[in-house]
Length: 111
Length: 112
Image (cartoon, rainbow over all chains, first blue to last red; front, side):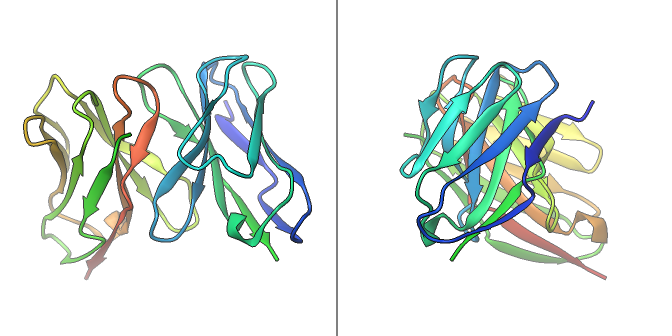
């Protein structure tokens, strides 16, 4: 089992460019999450999907959109990147009320 | 919404000493409290968790205590080793749901 995988590992964007971060899990989990991690601020939830076909905003959703493509895949899109979106992005998955498993992260820099 | 505060932000101990990290939460409906360890450049990984129907849980050198009345929970690491050096995050469930709110992290350094 690969667990949770994310692509790309690193990305540099110019202000205004768009991109999609991909996430997939092979643990048959219903719930999936996108977090951003900034120095001194812990992990903050961007969007959450309780099950295939449902998505919900987290703590910091502005500037992002998500798609739960199927049970395995949950993508995060930045339509018009801003320097404030420079961060490390983690995808995670879980079964209901249990441990969240994290992917390896995507380090994004917006110049 | 849920608010989780974590202290201290940095902690330095001598090898073999104990380390304690404390968190408080605001949502009385929270019922799941995991702790994650994150090594430099790596993903967060669960090290121990506790549910609201239990006051204490132990796994070898790691223990977690929960005081529901006071809304605080703590991580205890005994006999610390250099490989315990990492950032530790506490988290609390948002109500009884699957979402978690994380603390801001504690950088633990175990010195030889």
